[in-house]
Image 1 (cartoon, rainbow, N blue to C red):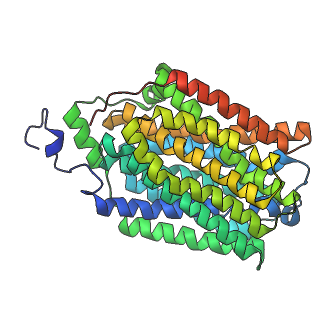
Image 2 (cartoon, helix red, strand yellow):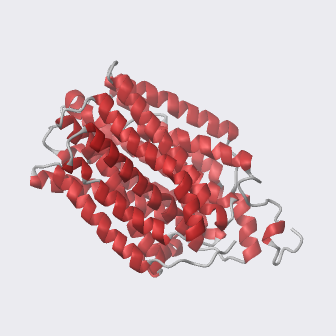
Length: 419
């Protein structure tokens, strides 16, 4: 760099931008697509074979949701840990480690004699997602300026949730003609193997981008505890973003578990359930191609708050209507709401963070966000069991999303762009 003490950001040795780093960006997109497919294989079939293959009591949603609880708490913790590890060791080693932890999952699904094994498999899935998906987000934030952060995050999440949608639909379709459990096992094995091989062979390190940007801006590093305190309670803007991230996962828990169970009880087939959940994930993923850039242009707050309200209220359509068409529209509207808030919240955290501790702050945010899986699964399951009605879970999620959206509207303020 021409002036190490205070270089011009436009003259960095490693220029920032999507066009300038197209090769790295495509490598990252391939990884997040496969990471999304790894979780997508469970979205349609697993809740429906809980009773038939594992003897799970059909009346207990809390017990059914136990596999989401294990996933959520572990993924949340791994998000925080991966943020610290990425700052110390780099993004690539953490990504590869995430795929290594996923290798036993297909074998556990195949040999599992009880539901407890599925819960254990989802512990490994939580580690995989916490390490691998987190690194695709962090790596993209490394290589773009703030003016492209919403776009980069939107494309990243489009690829990831596109993978969720593709895997959810394909496994539902395959399971309707073949053994559902074997479908899960084989599909999962192929995706995990592809993820590990491509991560090892193609994924490029990006930590040096963050280091040079930090040197240019004079940012000071934060310890893991300092970053945790900052994002959790010391800065009300981070706090508002973190609570919104946590609560929005309630919607995804509902689509992962309540919706398949509810639609099955209403007489929907596996293919129809796979179609509905695929529409939700597909619309969510594709819509982020425009919601991410939208937040770059008009700011993060308005899209995020609107998304909290839309996705929470749209979810009620599953309980209020009784036709496949209405459920498809409901799934699409819920997906649009998630697309408005999801990449925007991540980009907002990146906006508030200095490059030298951005991986840590993103890790803390993602810790609280994905802890929402575990919290949401517990709360939704208990509420539905107490009410002896799955519909109670839908109403609980809607109320939580509206309340969280109000908090976000009050507590978050847009920062000035820093790069």
